[in-house]
Amino acid sequence: MPQDRLSSVFFALADPTRRGILARLSEGDAAVNELAEPYDMSVAAVSKHLKVLATAGLVSQSRQSQWRPRHLEAGPLQEVVDWLEDYRRFWERSLDGLSEHLQTLQQPPDRKKRSRSRRASTKKEGIKP
Amino acid sequence: MTASIDVSTPDRPVIVITRDFDAPRDLVWKVITDPKHVAVWYGGPGFTNPVCEMDLRPGGTWHHVMQAPDGTRYTINSVFEEIVEPERLIWRTIKDPDRNPPPPTSLNTVTLEIRGQQTRWKLVSLFDSMIDRDLTAKMGFGQMIGLGTDRIAAHLTSLQGVKSRG
Image 1 (cartoon, rainbow over the protein chains, first blue to last red):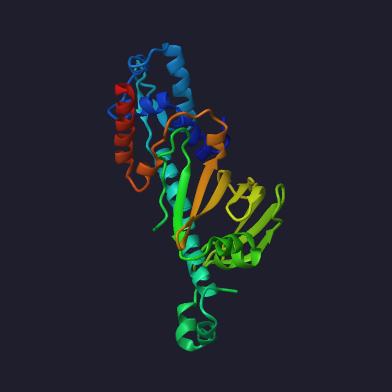
Image 2: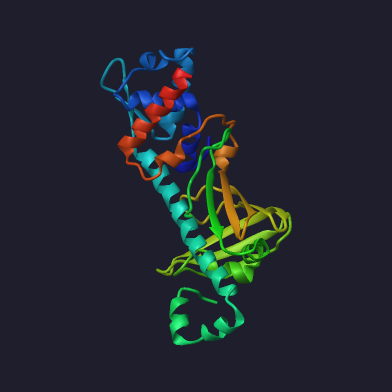
């Protein structure tokens, strides 16, 4: 199992059966035998998948009831979404910087000279040497 | 074109970001492989890069320190895996033990494609926790981006619906 939480959520989500279990749980709590129904696999095999999901913090289990329904924990999913959004933003920002830098490099020589004037240098403020 | 996350890859869930630049490919290659240039744009406006050392050869390291506008510094160390000038650059990020939790490491491939007067920059990021597993299905990450948790759950339902009908 991956050690950090984000990796363990990635790992948990990487399997179609486990995504199916999460999808089922998104409709309401369910016990292991109910979760196993749509699949051609044993309750034990489904239990293994549930263990992976529980380790990732995606599924919790009520201790009160005898049939112990499983419950979807959406928090870790949000963490993945947040992290991916950060990753996207980082590159979006970097590519804005890259685009601006390419424009500066491609300015004709006479415009480069002018870029030292106040008007042009204000525009390029974001660039640090 | 803005960056987009695309998971419509047939076999593996990866994050794909593309952008078209109004510049010749050789120039784009230069600014993404020459540390003097990388230090200018990496992180984007407001970010600085006090350290950017690139040993551009397979197995060579890329040692990088990025500073956010609030002064926070981020160390990013990578190893280059493949360099095919001027069209393909592959590097792998190394786990940073000083950050808790450490960000997932990734294998990153940038390809540069000539598109008329433009150059298409395309990044494919594959995260280790994905690489390690034998993945065959899409994770639906692209659709998950920006969605609330409830809608993620609904999306998982729809993914499953597609599967069971197929």
